[in-house]
Image (tube, rainbow, N blue to C red; front, side, top):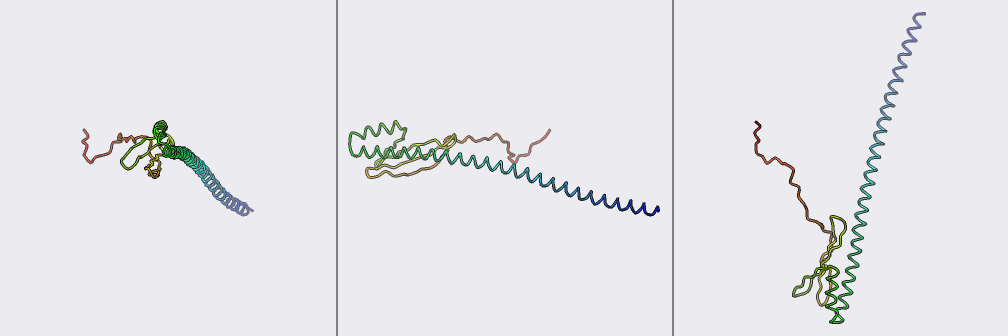
Length: 165
């Protein structure tokens, strides 16, 4: 009979090892899935913020583009009215000044330049070329609205050996 007790103990010891290893594998699998779920959530949150910033930037650009198009239309109307009547030319120049449109006159024609702010750091620059025969767009682009301020506070090793006392 004592021999049967040893067999029971061996069987119980073998079963316990199998349950333990399955539990460890299950815990590892759950831990991996939890980590992947957290990383996926963080990635989705980051992508949502990036998409929102992109949408806001596009919305701001097209708002500025719409204002620039309206200004361009007003300039076209002013030029058309001024060409038909000589006294309207003085009024046109005054209105262009009131609209804050820079006028650079040359012998061949006049450059008309204006900027529409997009956001705090960008503006939409429009430059037109106006002659007696035509009005054409020279540039229509986004530019930096402010001057860049370079940060030179970072100490970079210039190759000289520093002696430590």
